[in-house]
Image 1 (tube, rainbow, N blue to C red):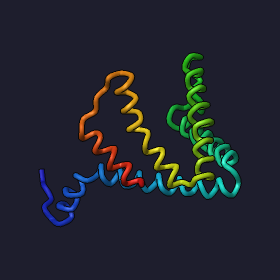
Image 2 (image 1 turned 120 degrees about the horizontal axis):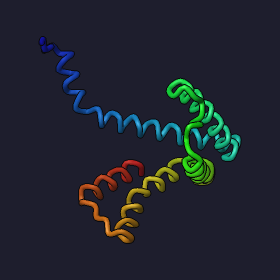
Image 3 (image 1 turned 180 degrees about the vertical axis):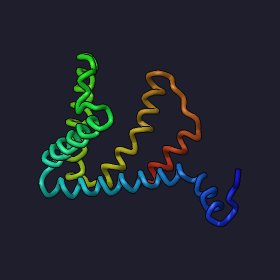
Length: 152
């Protein structure tokens, strides 16, 4: 087995240890760009229209993906019970939750909306502690604080 030792291999070894950080920065960039784009679109055509257009496009993409990957456009092999919970989840998350988010983009802007959304992990942690006695480490709280500070 031959091991490369040139500058390119040293670069790839150094970069190999930072893939998580690179992915996090890429995610943050995508999060920023999409929230600003949805804010702009919501101000132009309305939050309801933006949400409806996005849902129709997503359905089209997921249908094509399902046809390619699974051989069927929709998961028709799922049970009625699964379809019920999938429908409820989609209605609450995609239809109602995202409609409220897109409306918030129009009313208070993407920056404030994303800052409020970044408070979900600490609120969830506090709720888990109050209701179920869950305890997070100091490092967990530091991570959440850094994330919120970064968004702010």
